[in-house]
Amino acid sequence: MVVGIKDAAKLIGISVISLCAVLVCTMFLNFYIDILEIEPLIASEAAMLFYDAQVSTAKIVCAVSGGCLLVTSVIMLLFYIRHYIDTHKKELGILKALGYSNLKIAGNFRVFGVSVLIGSAAGFSASFLLMPTFYDLQNKDRILPEISIRFHPSLFFCLVLLPTAAFACLSVCYAACRLKAPVLQLIKDSPQTPAKTKKQKNEPDCPFLAGLKKSTLRTKKTLVFFIAFASFCFSAMTQMSASMDTLSSRMMALMTLIIGLVLAFTTLFLAITAVVRGNTKTIAMMRVFGYSQKECCRALLGGYRPASYIGFALGTAYQYALLRIAVDLVFRDIGDIPAYEFDVPNMLASLAAFLFFYELMMYLGAERIKKISVKEIMLE
Image 1 (spheres, rainbow, N blue to C red):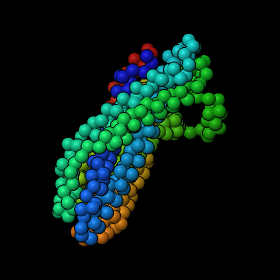
Image 2: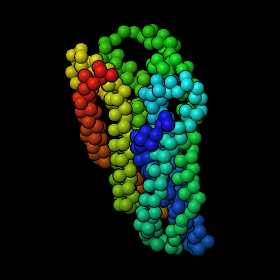
Image 3: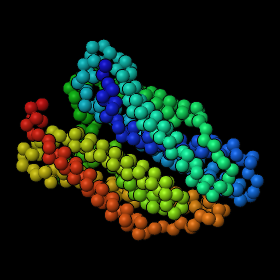
Image 4: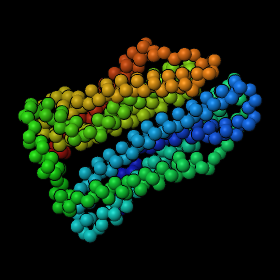
């Protein structure tokens, strides 16, 4: 077996994202389906306005959060498959030389769907633990008739079974495409095509550390997205959490904060770990030639800081736009909802926390670089 359960277990980031996405979508979609059943019981105009606002909120939250996390999960899955194939080229090349077809080898990558199954099943189960409190908070003023919690098998199929099957199929298809490389290229572990080599030769010369920083960013574009996404989650969720305490409830504020921090920590940690692991030989050679740990960290990790700041800015704009849409459009006819304005102190507090969080993660990455043994790398 080429790919095993242990390899699939490394995709913890996808499990975490799946958990968060299914948790939020299950609560709001289950509430959406259950609230539709009480529509004939609504008598007053005020209650109908509140009902329409709740229905619109459920749709917006599921579409925005679910869609964003789905795209991120797909990108992360494709990155892991590509990384696995790149680090096991020789073994895969030998299998192809022995007569195994691309599709037969790629079929083993279906176990990557296990990570989605674990995360989505955990999120689906956790949502039903939170639903009693969630339903009470959504109708805390008893404007609407009592809403009963019901289990809907269609949601389990759409949010747990279907994503698992879809991600397993996507893993197999993408792996089959990546395995179309010639056998000799896989066995020789060729790092790049001649076209790319020619393109790089035409680039102007620059100092080694600056060139290494540019090369790291150029060859790890997916990691740039992950780091920007982690910053985006931290910025959007922490600022939105503070506003949720006033606009919605403390439970929603706490849930938003926890999901944002978990997503940010997991994504950023995995991205930094991938950068370090993918440059172990480079780090070893830099140490042999006398470069300090600080210079290694600056060359490999320092180039990602602009992406993190851009992600934070986008997260700030995203949460502001989303809350303005919710308050000004969805709840515009509900009198108890206060007007929402951009909270500058909240943004500055979030920025200060982000800078501490990001530099802490960079410090952890530097510690991983420090622990790399030059002797072990040179003996490989």
